[in-house]
Amino acid sequence: MPTAITHDPTFTTPVSSTNTAVVRWSGTAGAVLQDSGVLIDGSNNITGIAGLTATQIDITGQGDLRLQDTTGGQYVALQAAGTTTSHTLTLPATQGAADTFLKNNGSGTLTWGAAGGGNLIKIGTVVATDDATLTITGLDSTYDTYLITAADILGATDNTDLRFFLGDSSGVDEGASDYAFIIHRTDESGTHSVSAGTGAAFIGMNNASGNATGEGVGFVAWLTQPGDATVQPMVHGSLTAINNAGILEYSTWAGFRQAVITVDRVMIKFQSGNITSGRFTVWGLKHT
Image (tube, rainbow, N blue to C red; front, side):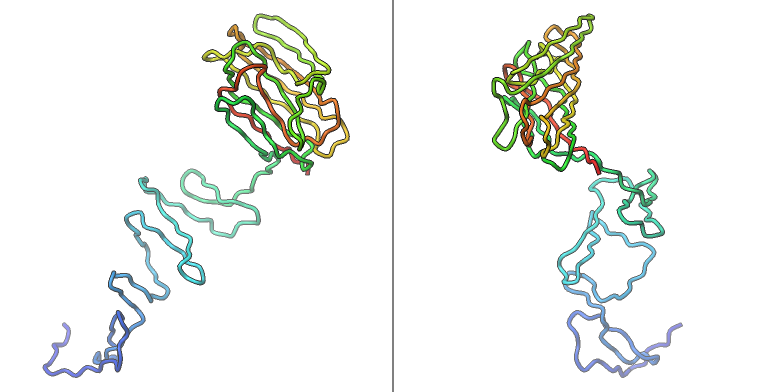
């Protein structure tokens, strides 16, 4: 049992005190009071505990674990989701190699993984909202080849074809004799056709796109010409569409700009009417 305190004990107190400091006993006799370096402010915030050690610390109410910088005040915070199922993320035992990333095995164990090659670099994407044209700029000599896609394209007008255009810093070329192209077309009824144009104002890709529910068009194409090329820019691709008769149509097509230009943009539009919806995207393909 503790020794009972006799009356009239004598305690030695600090000559001066530190505001909000926790007082501690010093000495084996337990008669000396000293200020500690632990402070409790008026909001019950505790500071001054060096090397705090615990088997578990709970930060409640979606509070932050804040790691401050050398100047204090600026920090990086970790926070749980507002509503979550309890789970544990276990860090790797060793440092990862350069350019690796943390990946989850699905059970909360994190390991270092090699980053992907990243050979496709997105140049731009645009979503149609009843637009006359969809244009993407930013193509240059960084890439020799570009991947171009159009997905879920729907026109406002029935029975019209989708067209492709190239351009440079002065704008998109739509001159009456700018392009030549060829289209090989097949539909689900077994009809085959070939159409071509030279001295045209566009590169053709298909015939008779539909605009009813369930109809529309999409394509994948390759532009095989860098911005510093000495060859006339060429593009080729394949297209699928549900046409104005509700029939599946497939076409392969190719075309070129009948002059050497420094291509920095591509554009699509319908023969007539706006593009109601869909996405148009361009990626650059790295060659090193």
